[in-house]
Image (cartoon, rainbow, N blue to C red; front, side, top):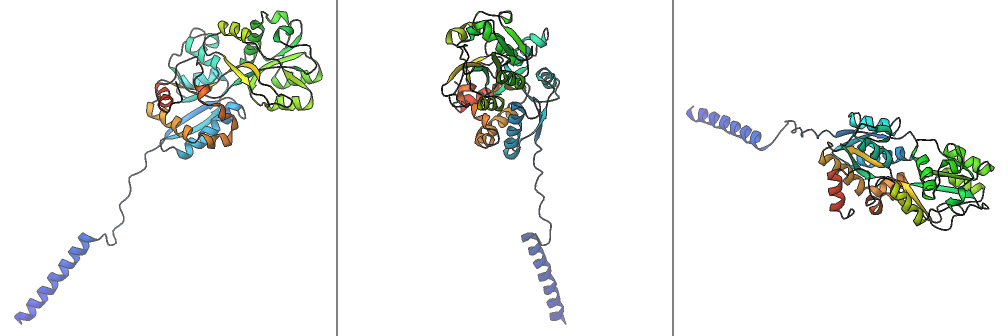
Length: 335
């Protein structure tokens, strides 16, 4: 009897020990540990010009690669209601990044132009986008050889107050003229080119991205040529404008039908703008992610190729965000 009781006790003890070992050495049917939740991305509203414009398309390409590869940032691109409204959005925290022309950047930062009397000194450059080249076009058989020959001619400019209009007026000033020395007509880009094709104007001056479809179409249907801006005239023009307002630029030969040679010109450079309060780590993540996957963004919008070391080292009308400057200097892009 005693042996039988001892045997039962031993069996119970062994069972208890076996369950203890199983419980300590295995998860058994326990649920696996839940991994910690991923950090929520910083959501940024990214304001651009209207739907389908160059800057809107550029913004969409950035969003595509940043949203795909960044673990920190999520971008929402939206079309704004004009450069001055976009600045108001940025300083009012309705957006965190916006596009802005060099003139808009300068005027908003210094309280001039449309921002007369109100300075937004918290604005900073994230990085520049592209060149908005000044295009001075005449018919192939025109007697206009230099901008000085525009005197007394019927010249199409864009709407007053626009960046493109300012580019046209500056060309005249570089050659000692004002609007009173020509017969100005104020038209949209498309209307300008159509007027030139129809022989209603002698020349057109406007600013747009290189390879503009409007110009390609016009030069395909009718023989036209570009009129260059000389170094001497550019020196006079540069002395009349704030640093970074416009920059010297060349339209490479072969961009347009029948255009074999490079064309000396100048350009407006739009920038992506932020405020100085955007955290350094967010700024760095945006630029680093974009720069590492820039080739992919270029497949979406080829003009992004213009955002290169040469453009980044052009003068800007307002300061860079410190984190942006640190990044570009760190990879040897900025001098």
